[in-house]
Image 1 (cartoon, rainbow, N blue to C red):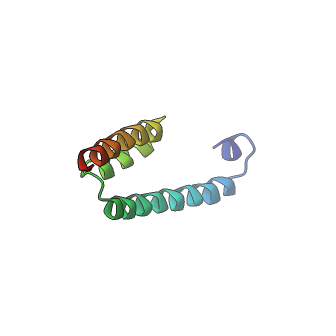
Image 2: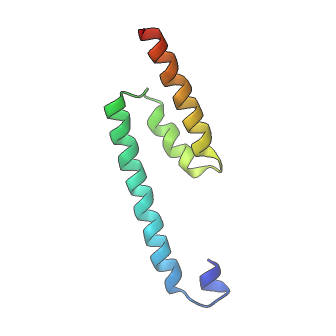
Image 3: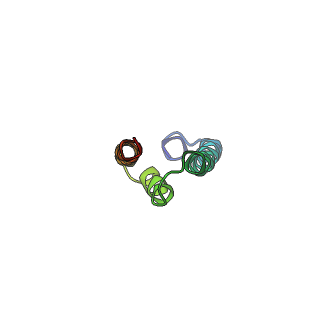
Length: 77
C-alpha cells in the first residue's frame, strides 16, 4: 500500500499481492497435508487458518498444537 499511495507505484500492489496470495494458498495446502500426515486433531486445520489471519495467531496455534501433540504422545507411552 505505501508503494501505491505514497510512491505512486501501483504495480507494486499487483505483484506483492499476488505473491502474498500464492504464499497463503501454499500455507493452506501444507497445513492440510501436515494435518493428514501427522494425524492432527480435527480442530487443527480451522485453528491454523484462523491463526494465520490474527496477529500473533501462528504463535498461539503452534503452542496449542505442540501441547496437544505432546499430551497425545505421553498418553500412548
